Amino acid sequence: MAKNKSGLHPKSKHHGNYNFVELIDCNPELKAYVHMAKSGRLSIPFHDDQAVKALNKALLYKFYNLKFWDIPEGYLCPGVPGRAEYVHHLADLLAVSNNNKTVKPENINGIDIGTGASCIYPIVAAVDYGWSMVGTDIDKTALQSAQEIVSKNSNLSSKVELRLQEDKHSIFRNIISADDYFDFTMCNPPFFSSAEEAMAASTRKNQNLNPKTPQTKNNFGGTASELWCEGGEYVFIRKMIRESKVYASSCYWYTTLVSNIKHLDPLRSELEKLDCGEIKVVDIVLGNKKTRILCWSFLSVKQQTAWRDLRW
Image (cartoon, rainbow, N blue to C red; front, side, top):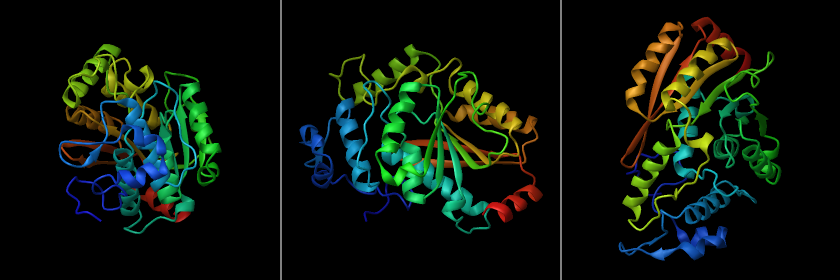
């Protein structure tokens, strides 16, 4: 295994350069996009959404033993290695919370808020750790796509459940029922506050990858609900925090990615106002990009001990 220079978690399956020869064997569609780069190594045009999709499909087939994976045109195609980082760090968080002991996988239940058409987080969680996952979304088409992925892969069908959030203004309401207990929630919230802001950011990114890329094209795709919401990331997470208080005893760790570090302190303040029992921030480093996971629990020390004794 290559030395970890990119900041990837030690348990990541994606250290080192992509082996495109092996990946093409897993997904022949990828061959059409592979070329020799100026570096003298095989690569793909990362500004091309179809190339990125073909690469992600190959990674999922090779490293996660999937037999089928696809997403509808225009839906978000997130990078598998980056998404896997969140799951690995969650595993570390659970182990630390269990007195530095690995929790039995059959005892872990998690929620992915906004699982999308790709279902990436539940895939990694189910395959790498054997956890049971609930994926939620407000988009029926996205959930239909995710359901097809789950149904056509035997290593997912008994581990992943999908639930439609019928109220686009709610996050946990209608999803967590009275008899539900979850060990964690996870979320990659919409970052932008408008479609225009999302497109402008995509244009800047694609111009860096390839100046000839059309300004209306995303290399990773994405529908409106996946990329932006009114108020952007901060407003979405603040709503999540306030709603999580209602279900304080239903989950050990609530977590979410926070892309903009400027949002971290005001979000901490929001949690402190709600008498949150414990707050943690976990850094994720991917090459030159740094993001973080904000984690909070409303459980008291006594309740945390009882949770571990009963569930873990």
